[in-house]
Length: 400
Ligand code: NAD
Ligand code: USQ
Picture 1: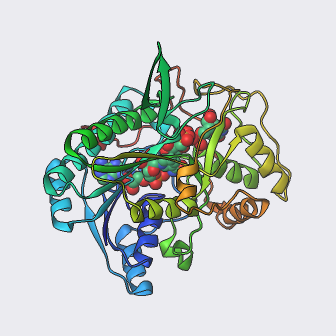
Picture 2: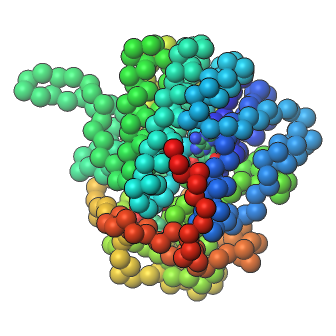
């Protein structure tokens, strides 16, 4: 089976490409390497050093004996996207290739526009390339749990049955996202659902929770195969950040009251979920939604778990002003049975898993730039400080 991995140089796309390659899939990685540009723009870097894409691929081919093709280009360039799909003739396209940071999308107008154009236009080009090349290609698209927001009722998997004035229908679950990034994923979902309806596309929208960890069977084979691990205030996700903060003696940055509760999953389960989605494709015309997370925790609970496991003294910041506009105490109960029904066996967040993440940070602690830890982007104002040093780096790639 042939698979295109869009965004295959990123945190999740790279390990997924290796995982599929190891299972005998014929993999082509597509990426414009812009994630590495964001690092330069913000003056930060992955905690774990990451090799250039070509070096990663060469090392994988030497170790595994499996070839991986690479195509460098921008999905917002329609000609490029059409060409890649037509040449590769994939059975499935896994689409990770978007700007994925909520704070990055909230820096200012330029970054909000960049995020929405990059994500929505890139995804539309992929949909059109599928429709015009071969509508049988299964689109496996990375969405996010944050599309739903945090309503005071249970969250269903994509759709909800509603009875209104005596009539009943099944309709898309209401969306109340909390950033211009999360909004871009809602727009993508609507566009894909429409494409399934009018063209008979087959698509799986994976509403993924927050991913943690960095270790997978394939990336652990050699340091050149390592995937990135972000801890900065813009791209670092909450549990990865808390682990870096704990090891470096920085108080854990719980924003506001800390009752923000999120669906979480281990990076190994991301790989398993993608594989399950590919191996059990949606039907022609079907817009299928899976909620891709395995457990849920409040930010406060996660900080306590890290504090308990870390061998050195850990303080939890108290009364830290929340840079975001979000519910800080709320109801959260979301369905996540569809991937379990397909056979997902979750890797849960145990003390051992947290200890493994802390060890990873310990090995790379000389690379931690403590100036990068503080949150720099404020939801309420668009005058955010961007780089750790305060000066403006080159962001010409933002021009759309
Ligand atoms: P990432 O930023 O590390 O990787 C995204 C990759 O896509 C990067 O390598 C980037 O260079 C590439 N890319 C971006 N725009 C592109 C374009 N226009 N053309 C070609 N390539 C482009 O992000 P990630 O953490 O690996 O996330 C991957 C996907 O999963 C994203 O769509 C994200 O929204 C989603 N997701 C991530 C998480 C998480 O916790 N990391 C959680 C839920 C959903
Ligand atoms: N938070 C803290 N302290 C921190 C960092 C974050 O309290 O130091 C809080 C945030 O305020 C938020 C929660 O932790 O309430 C999660 O923040 P995050 O940065 O870990 O995650 P988020 O911005 O939601 O985005 C991440 C990924 C994104 C993905 C999303 C899944 O970057 O690509 O779509 O998780 S979800 O949250 O389920 O929508």
